Image (cartoon, rainbow, N blue to C red; front, top):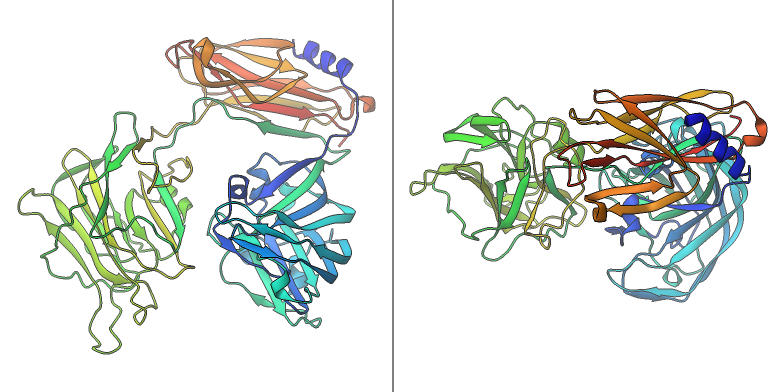
Length: 575
């Protein structure tokens, strides 16, 4: 059947070049305005050099995992209410290369961030058109760089370096600020820059992450075979609940705002409005220092958190509660990755806080941290009271919030006041940790009530390698449930994206991603299946595309008892 499907594809498709596609980075720019803004270098009225190194995951995380030819780059205006008259940048050069360093190890010496494939893709003037943007919506594309030479980039070979040398507009007020992100874990890029640039080989490092909203026009490289996934299998699940903020924290309320979080029967959490009643702490201050943990705090009852039954916890000065007393870290820099991979925790307001900060006049501690047992309910309550963010003792940026653990595994998070600088990263969330899955962020001020399910990986199809003519690869189906005894590999010539929802057949959330022009049935048990697929060494087949998808019968998965994988697009070529 596999041979038949391949012959069908070869007979039906020609080796024409692949059509151009576009990709936005960061991925969050696909769905709205990014949380930050930066005009550099396009609103700096003077010579400037600014070099970015973008993490390759911007590409691989959006199913671009094979070599591509980039021919155009557009950069978007920030979605702030504004009108600009436009201007012309008299001189702009843009160099691209595959970075020899990870973006987190960017060098202040510009050329050390360039690989041997460095290519000048633009060297001319550039017009910034007049336009306007409305608050809350992405602005228009205002920087449009059509490359004079296409750049071949392989995300598997390293991160992407983009190097601008720009004369700037005649008047910075004529051009808009640029849609950007400085959110850790979202921007996934760093930059080195030089103002009044006069050829210095080194620049200044911007300490945080920084990423423009950039759209690339690309095609998959001629002469390069690729195997690209699209769509998703059924059913993905992620229990973790979180929201990240860059300043502008919107969960605090007067006098109190709260969320009640229950552990549900599906292995996840159910989030509903809380009581909005704040418990006034009566216990002594724990006297936590900067970036420290409390001693082990014994609970009045065993608290069930997922599979963990805990009798002792630790408070972190940086705004979260470890659900295990064995933890040793009080991390000042919140990241989603750490929330998911480290120990189980509840984080009302994870950021860089300093309970030991002193009032500059009285030289007394400003904030305090408390552990109480409510004498009425016998519930443990953990309170961060007027704790300032690090370095802000003079600014009044003081934060009050608490957690109350309830019998049965529920808990309430309450916020009275939250005030940080606009660039401070904050994470609010709850996770079982220890390798939990990332289901994406929630808008905790608007999405309530909602529920999550248990961590589960969707049925997945992947290729063991690229479909180079004359080679053999394996098509690997993984995350197969234990009750599956039969499945099928489906092959087609027509890509169906975003896919046909199979809800009408009794499999809601499962989708068909390819026409079914051929199929091959497989039997047996186990969490993975592997099927070999060989490609003839015939150069005229270069550019042929075959779409494939797997499906298995899994009784009880849904009314139909069917699970499907993502789609997989195989582009055959000579290398």
